[in-house]
Image 1 (cartoon, rainbow, N blue to C red):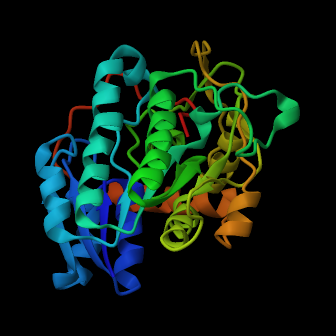
Image 2 (cartoon, rainbow, N blue to C red):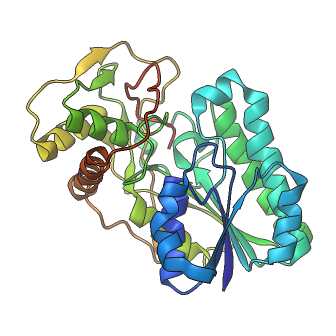
Length: 335
């Protein structure tokens, strides 16, 4: 089957590309490399041969539609996005330009190409907004009340997917992801708390925790999330499916787990809480279990151990000099 992965050079997208190639699919990667990296596709490029084609392209451009029409993928996995909540607040027009108008380019290309299905990476952490603790873990039937332009853009895309399904018989499945973490995640990203913690612990730097550290997120390992994408290629049509563990993990518990794995015995540095940050989040993945046959299987200890090991290997390998960002402390991120 011919597939296309937008954002395929990102850490989730590249892991999905590896999975699709391993299953014998042809894969077109579309990525402008603004945040993704060809290094993430090194294994895929080595093993994929002619089954893998990489297109450096901004999804907002008309060329995106033309490319989809030429390549005619049966399934498009749409992961390309502006993913930083803080950027969406500071630059809501940019956020909408990428996440809404860019998606419309993908949908128009899919319509013209006769694509069977679009599998969309939605955001479980921002889609539902602040949820009463009694409703956690939250189900897909819960009202969607995003509190950031990023969350609004993800909600809008789901509405467009539903409209294209009705108007053009373009099938879709939207995966509302928890806080996905794993190897290849950028430690400089807004939602990359696990990667940020791993880099600091491996390098022997202090880890900064904002607020009291009792804010919670639903951390799901990247291989588990990619399994949901692979299953959604043929199941869950017309549905939003939460992809998470159903478990709340506080930042304090996350740090303790990772510090123990890294062999570090030190308390984190405390900093003032960030305004507007969700207090608690967890996703009920019961629908994914029924409709996709999906369940998470990687424990937080095993998943973070894999991230720490990957970080040790990465830091042991000489890399081109890169100017570090002004701040590298962590928040739980968008999800």
